[in-house]
Image (cartoon, rainbow, N blue to C red):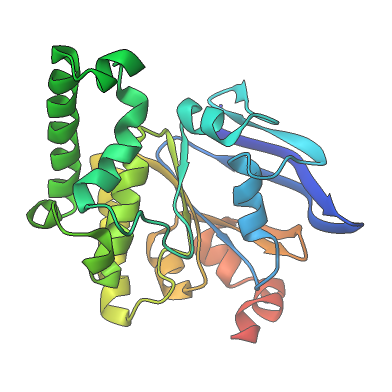
Length: 253
């Protein structure tokens, strides 16, 4: 059984089929790409998988559990985390505070214990600090723990966003155009980061990306969306050499 199963997923906006009968299977530990022209419906798929949108048709399952129709916070607790094309950090919070936001699901203090600063609160805060620092060190951000997130270079902000997503303890990580706005050097470093995340955390990753060099370099399989419908899917090299894909997508670059 695949970790993520998407069956006939679709959504309509005012008569427009933004995503139409989309099917997908992502196996445990896989690094899978979702590509297609601008407006093809890729980010809409991510919004459906994270509960931002409710599907008009179809369903999706994580580890065999039907998550269709659940709220974003429920889906996150069940094991799906995401990043965004436009980085959404808490810019006026420190680097470590951003990661600790992602760790909040693992906290067990009651509201009263937190307000009254009872011993359990301080013990838990220390444990969260330790977990956050472990994640920051993995991404080479431990030296900037007290910096404001807004003060980090763009590439490090992207790493921090991935670290915060991983702090929620996901089974599946969704990356929405992680290389957007990056120069070639930053993109190469990002490729190494994504590979490392997959290996170090035994993470299953589904990513949207327009950078075909990145997709070809790290994704084992890809699906291609065009006008909300699947155009092709399969091993990356096979799909990227498909004449229909080249015509619909690659030929537009």
